[in-house]
Amino acid sequence: ADKRFEQIEMYTEVIQDSIFALLDADKLKFASTTALTFSPQGQIRFFNEINELKQKFVLRPMEISNHPEVVRRMALITMNTALECDIYGNVNSTHVLGSSMMNGIGGSGDFTRNAV
Image (cartoon, rainbow, N blue to C red; front, side, top):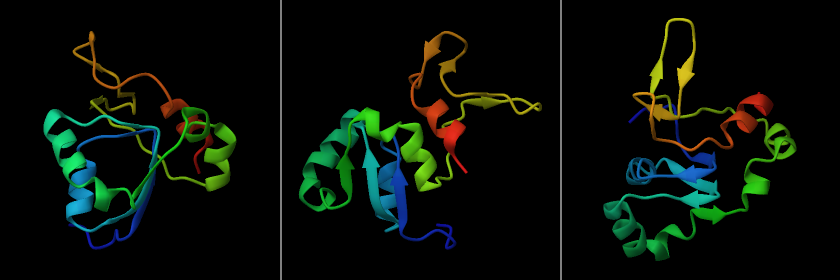
């Protein structure tokens, strides 16, 4: 609902159900991704709307999406899903309660290392 953000172009490794809120608000212009990991309800919606959505998405190999030179050249502002943070700035983006993996260990380091 934030009016400061319009026509967002997303460059990410994985797209999840949260993308639908951007689509519903007409905020997303385009998204480049390596994988689509929707919930069962998200999969149904994606396949029902695939003819409209195919203009908004491009799937790229992981070697391109996470390549440090590509990320650096694009001057990306990056973020990762934070599950918990502490007062010292440490962020956990992979494990719930220390043992259950929520997000895979992957391209976030490449993005962070090479972002603006």
